[in-house]
Image 1: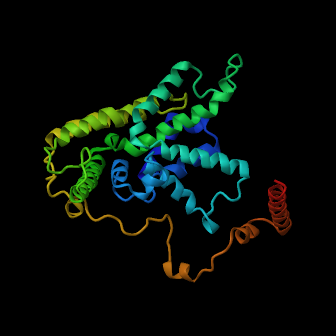
Image 2: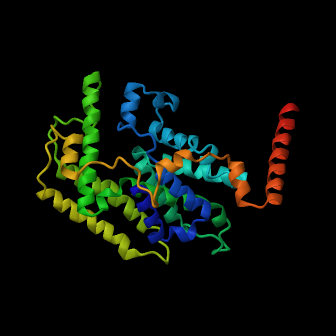
Image 3: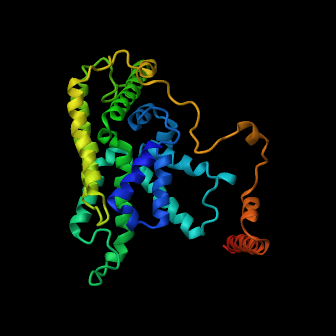
Length: 332
């Protein structure tokens, strides 16, 4: 939820939202919510070394990110299919954008993606459509520009905790470290080489490693966003994130670090409190009442939203489309 919230705020404050259409904005939010769907606390390198099913299915190429995007659409079935009322061409366009955004969160592509963005911005007319009639290719590049900028927004939402206020950044840093050390412990038990940053027995310089992360990753993506801000952008708000990053680097110098040898879920709970075990919903949710509700098909839900004549027209169109597809398959 934090990744989605930060991505949405950055989309607004950078002016990206004024350039993106509704489908592109929806794709960003869906991707941000689902970008770590099904994550099990291990990274792509671990999956490759262990020959995890995700690595085998996606040939060691962004295995986790491919899994997250696949799960995102796998759960959108039946009553959970929030896209079924969209025209088919819009569903395809949105699906492509969601997959692209989620895949862009693979940290190994960090530097190459920023280089692509920088090259495109320097080429001129970035995210400009119909405003420069003499540039014939501007309209063609416009959607690519919006999606390229959107990749940077979700990447910042994903790795931008270094630019958050100290309290939030500190907790995230320890939680990530505990996850890494947990992976290292498992690799050690399995006789696998321990991945970088995952060996709790190695000499750990928390201040140095966090300063490196803030400068090379968190601040880098925020500076990239400042490179494509629009006239309606809140520049001061965006720059305040960079100031947070510098403050956090100084705070680490005086931090009494938690012991990496014993850093685990119990220690995290002692310092930051227990994790939420119940979903947070923006309304009162009566589980007992919900259990007695009868599920409805998408067609039944649609019937309640539109009048009967429009519903019959919709169903006739669906049946006609399926029939035509069947004829096409039979003739080849």
